[in-house]
Length: 198
Image (cartoon, rainbow, N blue to C red; front, side, top):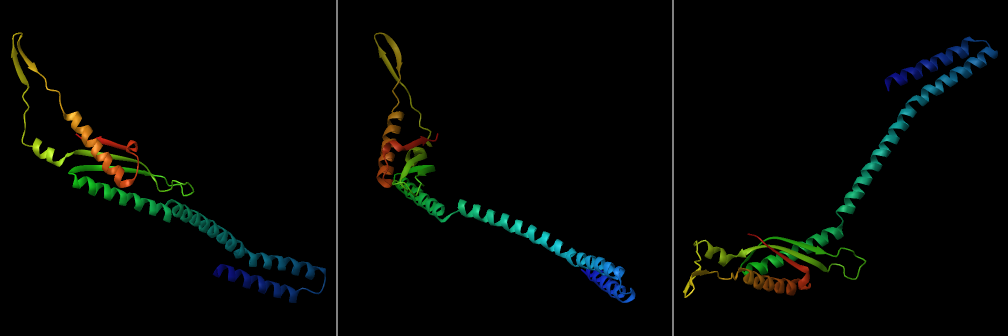
């Protein structure tokens, strides 16, 4: 800035000296016109820097605005409400499962987020990741050993394998959980998926 002021002062002094020293003629007119262009160019020099700075700042502001708009769209109020809605449903399902002594590891809820559709906020599917019932875990911790039935008849000795009721129990538990979740969230049982942890 100081350099620019010095240049203006030098140009003004030079302009004044030339206009007083040179006699009134074509030379004086040509030199004053030339010096006025020099003076004008010195005056405009920081203005060009200023305009480039303004343009660069405008570009920066535009990019910041675009970033803010993208953030606002990604984290809009509707999105926050839907996420809160999902978390409340998860809490209710976890509470209901806890009462029935089921340990739930993970709940994934899919909701219709299209605000223009008639089924907006309707639960499309529920996926549950459940481990065994708490009572069964405690029972299993006693190291219960099942012994197969030994049958002795006229054909000899044979070991009868008991058909495990584990799968039947799981189906009963699954139906119980699906009924409970379906009643709680109001979705069809076919849209509720259960995965058992081992």
